[in-house]
Image (cartoon, rainbow over all chains, first blue to last red):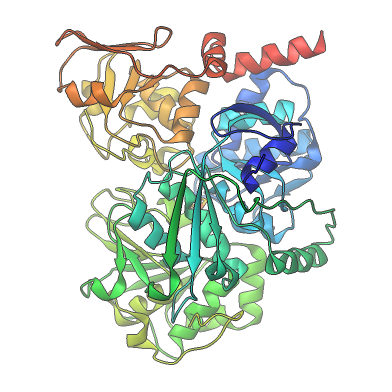
Length: 437
Length: 159
Ligand code: SF4
């Protein structure tokens, strides 16, 4: 039977030759992840289940990300609980403050997620890992606890939505703009319960960093997962990450059959996509930046699991050039992981941001969820490179959050109001084969 | 009664995620959407809402906060999948029934029977039979949630 990449992965881990959308299967999990917000509740549930040990201490990743470094006593206690569990269970992949960062950028970087695998994360943006050709999805703490105890999870096989991208991204257009334009088209629940499979020549042009942004926001369309069939660029990226981390495992990639069935197919003309901006308070309220009035902003946030990789920071630095941040704007730059931070530092990017008047911090989710490092006050306006602009997401419920890519974000920080990057930096550079800046 | 896309950030804002205490979470349930919710909700109340209820973050604090506030069930036109799983796992009754949502007005007495897969609007005297939960999921509900279900599974594997 012809199958999609998602069906093939689920079938293999369920010990079956094929599966059909809608059926419920028990699958073996290759990696289970939790963070400082979700791990403590998972540990409580794990203890209630009564399993003495996690099913495989080499297949669990625990990451201090959301409130890290601990922002107050309560969050310090959450981290203490996670740390104690990591020690007690001898969890191999425990990433504490100063050694990790935001899980969704960290795990691919650490070569811990690979094509053909099943990754279950107690965080909704666990769909990000699909950019490497694996099935990955987010669950709550109790689901994660059951995985920790058994190494298995029940999954309803999702219908797949095939999104075929033609053309090549133009100036300033990155993964963020592709996914925002798709969500604007299909709505905040347009792919509810589905696997979004991104294919076509438009994808071939995207860097890995951009691809990870594309799958990161599958959840913002209500999808169960996002996936990009692995290609030469994927394998090149993995080889590089395996080399850098010394983690070498065999790859078992899978691909969709050409005649596989899809619940829905969407065609996207990448040539026609402009840098996008999502207006408050839903990601689906995305429009081209050129259609938005010059909205004055109080804060710009360049960070989060969506856009705080090295490519994002390079783009932001390019747009910044020798300019400075507008006097009335607070610019927060939060590199996603320790490695990204070090790389950006080595390239002189952090110094450039700081010299321009930005507050540069250690890796954390921080401002993205209104936790710390840039919480918004009443009525404030923020442009964020993150993935959610819901009411109250970044602080006070009356604050307004706009979402955009790092080029738009930095241009906005310099201009003091929402502008197209062309207005600040007319010249273009090429990064990883794409005209991203 | 609430509209579409009630997300988990408004069900329980991140500023309260430093606790897992049900009563603390309950006191702040839905506060950014409806500041009067926690003080007006009565034990056993049913929340009725539009499409994509519970979208966003995977925080299990969301169904826990609603349950803790006294909500017995949520009837929505549709649910976001992580919230749906979390609700089943933690024992909050959830039922997707767009017809019931369309016909219900604020203040109507609504009741939900998971086992019979039935939603009733007692005020209007109408009942609906939405699509039942898959048998597999009903097993988890009958076991009392995922924790006892998994416990049972591990025990039967051992014996
Ligand atoms: S950066 Fe934001 S969206 Fe990503 S995992 Fe952290 S809190 Fe969630």
